[in-house]
Image (cartoon, rainbow, N blue to C red; front, top):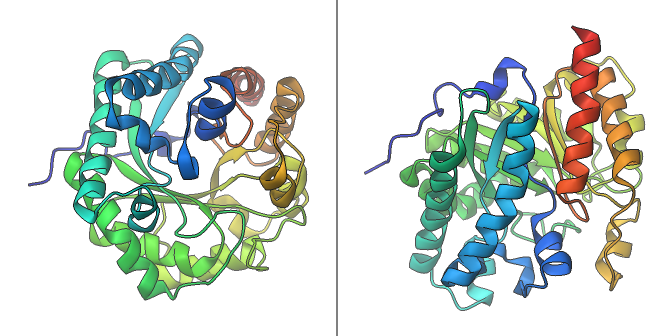
Amino acid sequence: MKADAKYRQNLPHLGGRLFLTDGGIETSLIFQDGLDLPHFAAFHLLRDAAGRSALVRYYERYIEIAKADGAGFILESPTWRASTDWGAKLGYSRADMAAVNAKSIALMLALRDAHETTRTPMVVSGCVGPRGDGYVSGEIMSADEAEAYHAPQISAFAEAGADMVSAVTMTNAREAIGAARAAAKAGMPVSLSFTVETDGRLPSGQTLPEAISEVDAATSNGPAYYMINCAHPTHFDSVLQTKAAWTRRIGGIRANASTRSHQELNESPDLDAGNPIELAGQYRDLVHLMPQINVLGGCCGTDHRHVAAISLACRLVARQAA
C-alpha cells in the first residue's frame, strides 16, 4: 500500500521560489567525513546506527542553510547507487534493495518532520542514478530496458511516500526516457538531470538540446523539469547562451566544484573543492540569464560552504529582479 506523499500532487518548487538541495554527498562523506563508501554507495551507511547518524549530520548542515536563508529545500535521498546492479556488487538482493530504498525515504521523511517550517517547505525526492558508471555512457540500454531496470527503485520510492523522483547524472537520452516512463507509471513527478563533458555534450556525444528534445518527444513532455549536474559551469554555460525554447525546460543546477574533466576526476586521488565564492558567482550569472532556474545544489567536490555561497549569490539576483 502506497504511503501518502505530502507534495506529490503539488510540488512547491514549481512555483518559482528558491529551493536549495545538498552538495556532493559521496565526495563529502568520503573526503571530509572519512567514511568508506564502496562503489560510491552512500545508501550503504544505512546498515547501522553510526552510518545513519552520519547521514543525518550531513543533511542537517544544508537544512540549516535553507532555514536561515528562508529558502525551500529538496531532501534528495542517498540512493544514487541504490539500484539492483550496484546493490549486487555489495551483496544486496533485489528484496534488500527495495528495503534500502524504502529506508532511505523514511530517513528523508523523518528529517522533514524534524525540520520543516512554513518558511522552508521540504520536498522528499527519491534519487535515481545511472545503471552505468555516470562518467561514461558505456553500453546504452534501449528506453524499454531502462524503464524495466529503474522501475523497481522508483516503485519503492512511490510506496514509501516520496514526493518525486530525480534521475541524475544521466549520460544518454534513452536511459532518461526509461526513467521518466517508469516514474510516470508509478504516478511520480520526475526531474531529469543530464551530465556533460567539458565540451557541453553528454558522454554519449549527444548535445544537451538534442537530448532534452528527444526525451520530451518520447514522453509527451513528461519531466517536470530538467537539470544539469556533475559538470562545472564552464563546461556548459556556453550551451545555454541562447533564447531557444528548450532552455526554458531547465529548472536546476548541481554543478561540480572542479573544472576538471570526468576522466581527470576519476583518476584523481585528491578532492578539488574549487572556490566556493567563484562558483557562486557562476551560478548567479546562470540564474540571471535563466531566471526559471530555482533548484540549486552541488555535485562532486561541493559541500555546505558552496551551497551557502550559492544561496547568498542567487538570493541577491532574485531581489534585484523583484
